[in-house]
Length: 243
Image 1 (cartoon, one colour):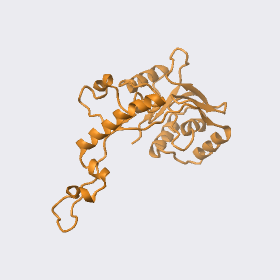
Image 2: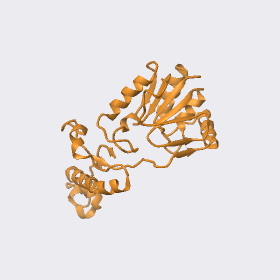
Image 3: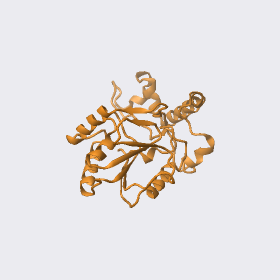
Image 4: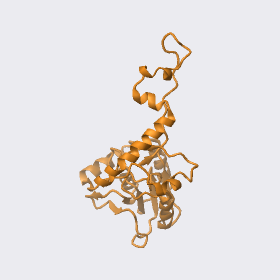
């Protein structure tokens, strides 16, 4: 489950002979989706109702919930100060994501050639930061594996700079390569040795929304950052949301 801002279509004028009217005044010329999206209140009500109706099926299939339970809505909305908008996305995995040595070597090669991954500019910033603050020989936590069709990109970027990556994620991952390690979230601070540095690329802001199989928690993002602060030997982390 993701809580995201709604998307409105652009305001269009000048259709047919009556140039003074908006196209929204001609519902028979619009698809039903356009008609609904041009009316935010109606759109929000329908998407919320659809999410609420979808919850029983999500529970039955063991998938992330589509609608926030009533007992958590006040906290998620900051007690009415923030509007809740629904858009469902299920990124949870019951079976491990497998990366063999060949796949990992191929991704490492792409990183070494200077290719940028899914997040483009963020990757460029990360390269600049790692050149200024080397991680050679250091233990590095990767908070959430950001595959996005590119494979274990940040794990391989860490290897490129001679770091030793350990990925922490809610989805199980099977790295068939001794250079990469995996710890399933939620983490136990007592059982983990402190890291020298950490990456968080479009990760913390997803915590607590259930999209990746994590429990619903309005404060999960803040708690995750607090845990990470305790898990790092010194204040060295590279974090960025995707924009």
